[in-house]
Length: 361
Image (cartoon, rainbow, N blue to C red):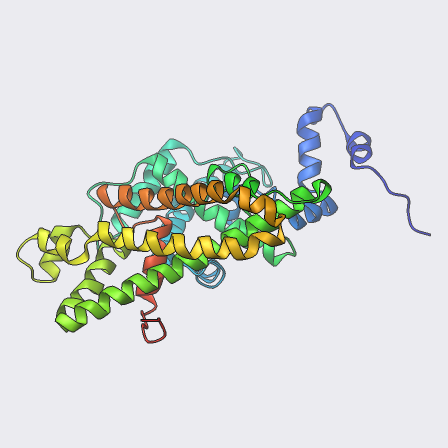
């Protein structure tokens, strides 16, 4: 016969020893190491391992594979991440080993966030390792902390997925997606949450698909136009875009590399504001069409007609946010490749070659 089910709370109380730890600390410790609970949490996209433990036991080879194959990041993004991880290992992991040797940290004690001093040293390491295009000064400790947390999140997503968990989804409370998800309610109230999740997942897929398609269309249209005028100009356009977005070069640096007399010539060549406006137009057309086609699966057609204006407003706001991030990022001082969604996807096309043969004229 099967053994009777035993509550986790019973295990905690049965093994609790007041002399070793408080009840809250003991409960947390047992929960974090409970195999069945951890498997259940992974199946729902949750991992209790800290960011700092994930980064500590990830090798550079693992990181390169996860970022390039699972997250499909560009080679330049992977290269930056490897520098950051190496700096983390050389400083944070080294310090932790020293603390363990001195008895200041026990073997399985939970990894704490890096200190301000450690973040400063990591920033200095990243600065010295960025030899090809070093920033004016080391990144701030806040920026290093944010980059480490993003890196850990990417690794966490892969671990959850590779161990049978679900791929991460964007929260319905996110301002950029909550309005879209709630603008098209499910017809059956009992299934509303599942319907919203399904629609949100579909929307996210369509958004990325439409953004990539719009970027490719606009870039190819611009390249065809320039090639008809001068093939070198078209080549310079592609190079300038890559140097600006994917390597973080300034307009003046790009002008020197392209042997132009002044940076305003680069600005005229790439016409970033016009480029973003064209991508925005194509993206709105594509998303509007995709949502109009898929929304009837989630909502009654009569309700959909009443919400057309709201959906259009939400799409406009989401796209405007995307473009505003790209515009703001382009105006700020850079210390490496630009990191907005717009820039990352643009570099995705440029790094992998932009074949315009299959793009409709």
